[in-house]
Amino acid sequence: MGARGSDFGIRDRASACCIATRGATTRSFYNGRMSSAPPLRPRPPLAPRHWPAWCGIGLMALAARLPWALQRALGRLIGDVLRQVLSARRRVAERNLELCLPELDATARAALLRAHFHSLGIGLFEFGRAWWGSVAPLRRGLVVEGLEHIEAARAGGRGVIVVSGHFTTLEVCGRLMCDHVPLAGMYRPHSEAAMEWAVRRGRERYAAAMFPKRDVRGTVRHLKRGGLLWYAPDQDPSGGDAVYVPFFGRPAHSLTSTHQLARMSGAAVVLFGHRRREDGGYTLTLSPALAPYPSDDATADTAAVMAGIEAMARAAPDQYLWIHRRFKRQPDGVALYD
Image (tube, rainbow, N blue to C red; front, side, top):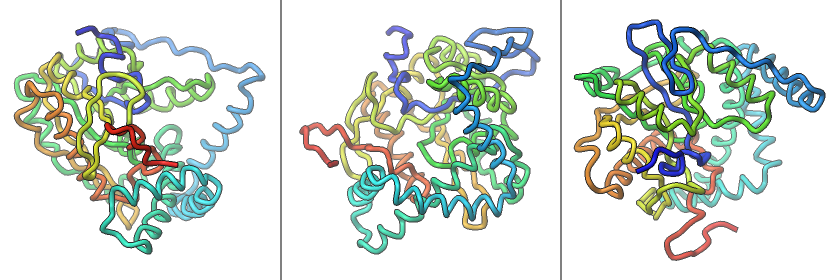
């Protein structure tokens, strides 16, 4: 099997970020290579065509410094606006709730839809805080469960794939986990150069290193060295190896990358759930390693991962990313969305 991103579906936007631990040395990882010196940062793109992006970045950076209670209130207001303005995404979310949570009546689904857009609005501030602000207020009341499962999975120097899903809290909870584990990230470069520069610089404030998503060789090598890799394989991929497995009782076109990475690296797989509580605090939960994993059956392994992500979504349904067309591909070709 080759080491190109297409072999794992990592080139798809469904792949989110990955995290890896360093050893006790002071060496750093950069683009999949070991280095004894920090990498040179590229200069920020300042050409006039990037000025609109810089204005947006500046506004987000300023908003990231507002008091946390005010951000939550503003986030809900922004969410109400987004629910009206983003009509196409609202319809996708409505359809997903119908497909995934049929036990809810229309009133309950409408309430959950509104809560979801509130979470999306708050998530904008969470992204800004993670990249350019302070998470000190978010550490108050933080609950971290299951760190012992990471230590157990790493016994003997084994790498660990930490699997989560696409939630509105994804980025900020990754930063909060950095307080407990030195993390590095695999990321999808942004198409806008100014945003790419600013976001990467923001992530480098707390991440041990950043790997471009196509650096599969570096990722596998990192796992073989006992590192941790975090990413979210729960969206419908546009490329890569994928199979249909159950998700909320429906066939979902899903990446087999967790299975393939585990087979190539010998890594264990631990599920990572995270949610924002009603009191504004966060709970991060690491589960015992899946076992046996990997098996010889890519479909069964992928189904186990998706079942774990479904459980996370049921635990925090307002924060799962329902605006994504998760079931746009069906084995019988039936279209489930307008």
